[in-house]
Amino acid sequence: MQDLDHIQVKVWRGDASGGGFAEFDVPQQPAQTVLDVVTWIQRHADSSLSYRFACRVGMCGSCAMMVNGIPRWTCRTHVNKVMRDKRLTIEPLRNLPVIKDLACDMSEFFDKWKRAEGQFSGKDSRQQPVAAISPVEPARRAANAAIECINCAICYAACDVVKWNPDYLGPAALNRAWSLQNDSRDRRHDERLQAVSGDGGCLSCHSQQGCASYCPNELNPTGSIAGLKKMAASAFMKKKYRERHG
Amino acid sequence: MVELRLYLAQRISAAIMAPLVLVHLGVMIYAIQGGLSADEILARTRGSLLWGGFYGLFVIAVAVHASIGLRNILSEWLQLRGLLLGGLCWFIGLALLAAGLRAVAAVVGG
Figure 1 (cartoon, rainbow over the protein chains, first blue to last red):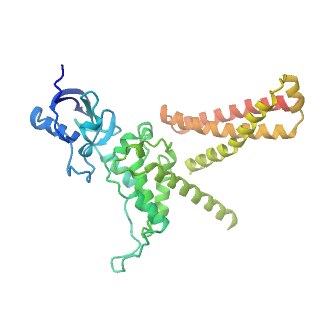
Figure 2 (cartoon, chains in turn purple, brown):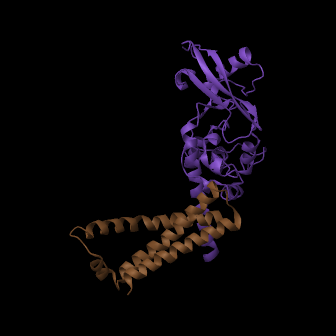
C-alpha cells in the first residue's frame, strides 16, 4: 500500500526527439506547491531533471507546466488542490517544442507576440510632458483589464486553435495587442490591427475560452480577442464606406 | 483581407439564418398540428413568392455559412491550405446552393 505521506509523481523526461514518464516517490509537506515537488525531485532523486523557474511567487511566468493534464503556474499551485489519489502527473507545456524534460522553447510564443505588434510605440518623445490618462475612460479600462499578463504561456498551452493552426498568434499575443489598441499613447494602432486581423490572427479564435478558464491571473483573453474582432470588422466596414462615399 | 471578408460573410449569414430557422421550425410545428399531407403542403407553397423568397434566402445563407465553416474545419483538422482549400470551399458552397435551390424550385414551382 502507498505510504500516506508520500505522493506518487510521474514526470515527463525527454527532449524534442521524444521521451517518456519517470516515476518518483516524493514526501508530502504542508503547503507544498507543485514547483516544490519538482525541486525536491531534482535535489533529492534525479539531479539531471531540467525545469524552469525564477521568482517562485507568481510574478515571472516561467514555471508553467501541465499538471494532471491542465496548464498551471506551478509555484502557486498547491499539491493538495490538484493531486488525485496522491498522484501527480507533470509534463512540459502543451503546444510548445520541448527543449528538455519540463523546459519548453518559448521562442515561437514570443515571436508571435512580436508579430502581433506587442511592443508599445509611444506618440510622444521624452521631451514632452507625461500624457494625462483618465483611469475611468472606457478604453483605458479595457487596456487595464488585459494588462496584467505575465506571459507564462498557460493560455497558449490551453488553446486548441494553437494546436490545430501553428500560425495562430495565440491568446497572449492577441490579448497584448488588445491592451495596446486601447492605449491612447500608442501610435501604431492601424499597423497592429492589420497584423492581428490577417491569417492566423484574432479571426481564427473559436471563443472556446480555454485561455480564460486557465489564466492564473484571471484575465479574459477571449474577451480581448472578441474586442479585436469587433475592432477589425468595424475598421473594414468604415474603410469600405469611405471608399464608396468619399 | 480574405480572412476578414470570410469572417464577416459567415457572421452576416448567421444573422440572416437565425430568424429564418425560428420561423421555419415554428411554421413546421404549427402546420402539422391537425395532420398535413405532402399535397396539402405543396398546395400552399406552389407559386408562392413569399415561401420562394423565404427558402431561397435561407439556402443562400446556408451555402455561405456552411462552406466557410467547413473551410475552417478542413484547414484546422486536415491542415489544408491554398488553392485546394479554396477550391473545396467553393465546391461545397456551390453544391449546397444547387441542391438547396433545386429543392426550393420543386416546392415552389411546378
